Length: 231
Image 1: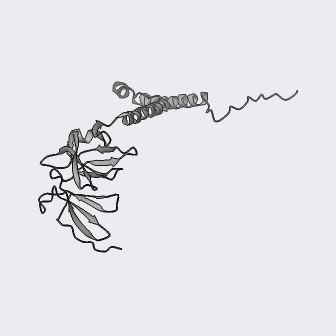
Image 2: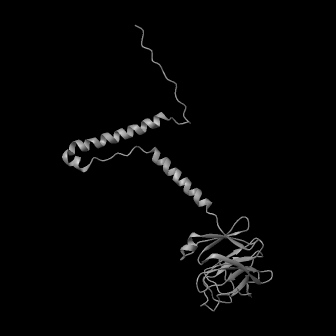
Image 3: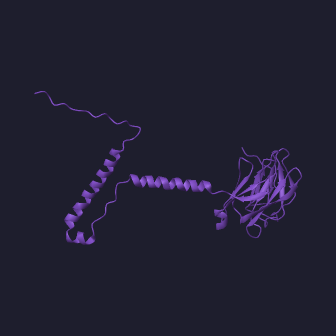
């Protein structure tokens, strides 16, 4: 069931809304053409159903991300600031203050951000930039540093795919070459009769290979000797 809440202090769109550790909600940025709220911040208190203006960011942002950190602060990354921003900043609700969180290697907007189990933040993607779409970066709140995300996971997945493809191709029967066009034109009947025979030979060879290598899960049956009847 829905119930009405108090309206925001400013009309917004493309903003972020982040639940804080104390249950309040931090609303950051948005389209600066709507009430000029691009750098403006406000906090909603669900207990009192009230909005309170908070300290503004260092500059306007829209299509950014806002991630709650384990210590209760909020990391705001990228967005549009007359072009894709590569900057980030952190809001501390305890002091109602913003501090710089350094710069990414590439500017991003409409990207994604996820809190990792160790407290770091993974930032990926970008809607229009090839550099941003292909590069992922990790922010470490403890050191305040940005690092490029490792690509080991993608490499391992690619190696597994190649191995599976090679295994599938090895299990396929040998390829059968079609007769040359000149041979088909000269002796069409004989040439076409050779194709099914070749296909059958390839299938027989494949089955013989499978029979020669019995599955480890199925034990081989002992040989049975049939004695001729007595005279």
